[in-house]
Amino acid sequence: MKDYNTLSVPEATLLQQEMRHQVVTAPFNGKIQLIAGADISFNKFSTTVYAGIVLMRFPSLEPVGYSLVVKEVTFPYVPGFLAFREVPALLDAWQQLPQKPDVLVVDGHGIAHPRRMGIASHFGVLAGQVTVGSAKKKLYGTYKEPGEEKGAHTPLTDKQGVVIGTVLRSKQKVKPIFVSPGHLIDVEGSLSLVEQCVRKYRLPEPTRLAHNAVNQFRLGTLAAGYTPADV
Image (cartoon, rainbow, N blue to C red; front, top):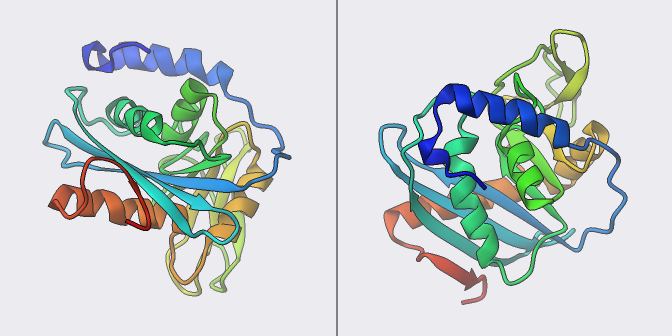
């Protein structure tokens, strides 16, 4: 992998345009025994990135362990290019996992991105891993607001009308989340998987627990490295 800290934004744009052709959106028919959630915590004015991956059993979503990494990055904070700040640290966290999940749900976008290369797609291509993006806000695309009931959803489309994701009301009368394929899975499969991971909260459990873990890590209540969940 290239050193992203040395890239300019135009160089990063070219790399995204090259990598987008490696993204595979196709039905995922594998068996899921382990699933994981990934998230990043950083201040956009800081060079320090905190990355976390939470490994969980599926479908119980019982945590197995936490992989946490802190890394210095100098690539600028630019919307649409956050993968260049986040992916290197996530790859380090990925390498620490004693066993790899069947699917990784990333807090961010997959192909629902102007160049089809959100963080979930970027990571998926580099790791050769099935990934799904589950984001709190829209980055790109057009949609109609889904109904207010839990489970309501509408397609997210690009400028040509191609479906690039789903806008899902994960809880009644809360803001929807934005689900898109990252790599080696399709739009329908991504939606189905995230729906199975929603419990009491707006966010699916893998990214919700990853979000909590990286924030605890930043505050010093969790340590760097891999820690089994029962410790």
